[in-house]
Image 1: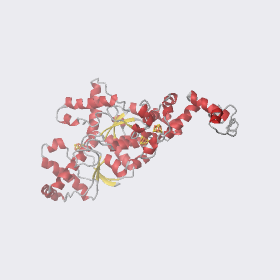
Image 2: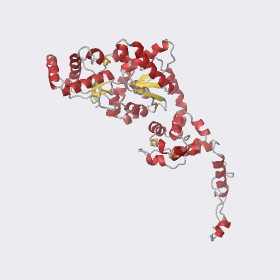
Image 3: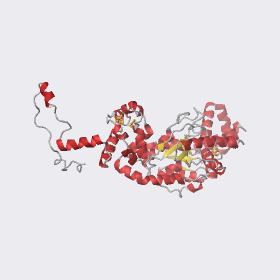
Image 4: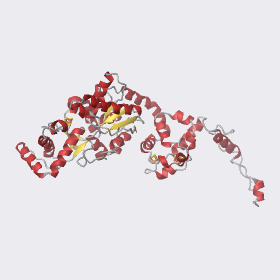
Length: 444
Ligand code: SF4
Ligand code: SF4
Ligand code: SF4
């Protein structure tokens, strides 16, 4: 499904045209053919229209979809409100043929008919399911290098199920899968599934609405996120515009907020100016500066490791509790070490003793659904630590013995003799010549 109609809704073109710009760039980059159809109205919005006139809600939703059906297309929308409206209308009119025929009788004068044969897809769904994280990641030219990103799903992308069926309505993961595919470290946080509270603002409950935003923003801040990603313009409004209101009231909140397509557009190499990021009310500069600072660190890391594998482990952590070392010594957390590497802490990791605790037992690799494992990364870390003169004394001394004697221990001939064992043939010898060094130190 690379050719479709787009439904922008009201909020994006009216309030956040920069989201429209980023979305259009991402569609182009991913080779989509997008049709703009004439005659669309508000989807309509649920709280304001449905509570006034339920029939009007279904009729207008069906009319918007009928325009797409007449063009023989499916529809993609970047607005979760519109998505939820369409899904609800589809589900209601599919289940109630009388209501559907009543709607179609009113659409007939315009030459329209709603049969529910089109596919209604949210932008996040198009990226995550129709294309998939792999093809989305394939276009990345500027990976997020482990920047800590949290996702706010909002309500209308997920619920009500079963009208909406694309991710778990209470425990979704698909947008996080996309964010991880861009190279970020996904941050889980206790209030992830809390509603943004924006709808309260629309019914005159501003204080309650701000309380929702405040609670979530403070939670995100406490979890050290670099940015929050949203998939709905109304959620964006709540966390950007209303966060700015909290800032003006001198509240200590500062979480840069990005709509999903803005993050993808940046990772695809579009500049902040091109997508109008300066139009956000809460500045995204701290996020962009952190991203730039990562480039040098990460170029160094990429020369030493496969960074995409490190990111996979950080975002997966499935084998975390199976490492035999962790079971005995919980201070050894291999996936946390992978996260620290991505966070630019290579020198700190090398200087500590934790990396030497990996037994290179390959349990993680055997259990890994993708056969990745972390033993090879720890082996490489150990090599780099030794090259930097940071190896434990025992390891350094053992290697010196190995180079000088060719052995790590002499045979206990007296004990062997007592056991009736014949003396071994001559063994060992100085390996420094073979290894290209006279003192063993330079051979490393
Ligand atoms: S749901 Fe909101 S953003 Fe979408 S069209 Fe309706 S009013 Fe506009
Ligand atoms: S290879 Fe290392 S990290 Fe993996 S399970 Fe064994 S000890 Fe743990
Ligand atoms: S080794 Fe495999 S299972 Fe373990 S954290 Fe990495 S990707 Fe996940």
